[in-house]
Length: 588
Image (cartoon, rainbow, N blue to C red; front, side, top):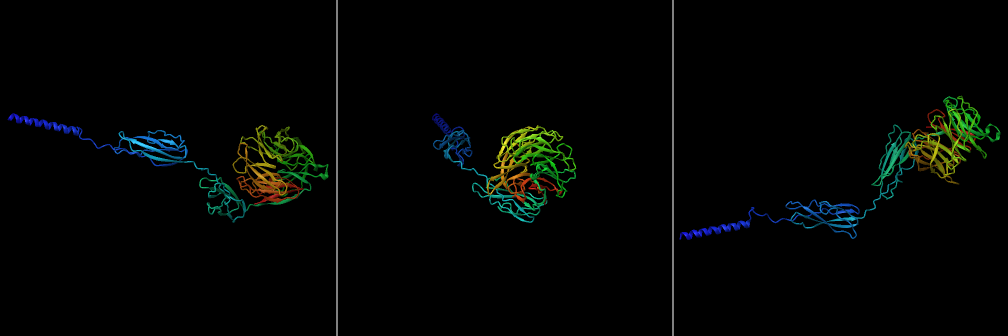
């Protein structure tokens, strides 16, 4: 019996052991299996609104996996417009890109995988529109009309004529850019269209206006306000013979300005008065003495200049002999001064036909004064080089193909430190620019078209250190007559661009520049054959000019010259007209 019980126990133990093995096998040998793997979540970013041509950057960076497993990305363009050729830069990266090529909605799908299972797909919409017409035109500021006022006046500024081509509402910005020294003037409200300020001192006030349309500023526009401008007082001296070109210099060494004027009297022919110069000494107070006469040639000099030709520190006189009564001349006359008010007999030097304009300058840089002579007939300009002793070379003529040269001006137009020429062609509608080589030679550089031109001159009218051109011209003929002075700004390279026209008197026969009211801005002085007036245009320093101030003259006007005739440190003006000389003294 014992053996049977032991056998039964042994069998039971074996059965228990086998059962435990089955249970352990079912449970595994690693301590247990985790729950089922959760799928990752695809997040393709926010919908986007873009324009055709934009680069779209997708972003799946917020996609995630519950078990924080690493993710792989799979982007697909699911819906694109028919005809589109877009493609993804790399469908397997977190931030692929593509460029939209048509206006429509682009649907992009993202699926991520955690290495075991894909996420559910998610989409993002990219809405592309045509590029709008965003071209914004620049507004234009208009700061109003220049004004001549009195100290203490309240000035009403007016920017209401400023415009915006797109019709946008304008924002105004006024500022005072220049005031007289010591002025405390301020603008009442710089953002109104019509603010005010009070002029508290005599002098010039420059006000700048810019306007903004919400996107871009306009170019600035300037208005010029002059308080207590001053004026000229006229003194008339009668010669009793027809006057022509006029110049001024200290002929007798007393520090007072004297005058020389070309004269002609057909009633005394033949005599000295057929072509003579009257020398009239000044008294330092604007007065003139009895004239002394010198024969100058066969015709009255239409242009005179006073310079030291022979380097003896004494002023000499040079005049043109254009001809008269249909007989053209072809010489210039040189009269050497003696330092006590007297002059030598005239020496003649050949130039071109009908010399009308004249200027002396150091053309070939040898420290001897040379002459540039504008010929109204034939060759455009004659260059005669001085020897420093009062004599001149044979002429070198430069024919610019236009003729009718009524004015010659000099300056360094292309910034090479050599003298250049500007020739105004009366009736030929242009100004010829000749570039000098520093040795007396010139080359034609450009031609500025100026319809109906009379005379021209040069000066820095806008304060940029480059020489500009001023040309008087007729815009209409007949009655009523409309003449203007046209300003062309230089760029320092020999080129000129039209800036603006300003009204002036008709048929200006002579014009020069000077700062009469001492505001540091160049002004223009002109004499008019048509209106018989002296015209002053005060510059505003930006290339603009105030309304013209006119002073009537008797007889036919011929020429003018500026200088300080009464030693008050202000520029005055001497004008030849009819049988008289008028001295206009500036009164601040």
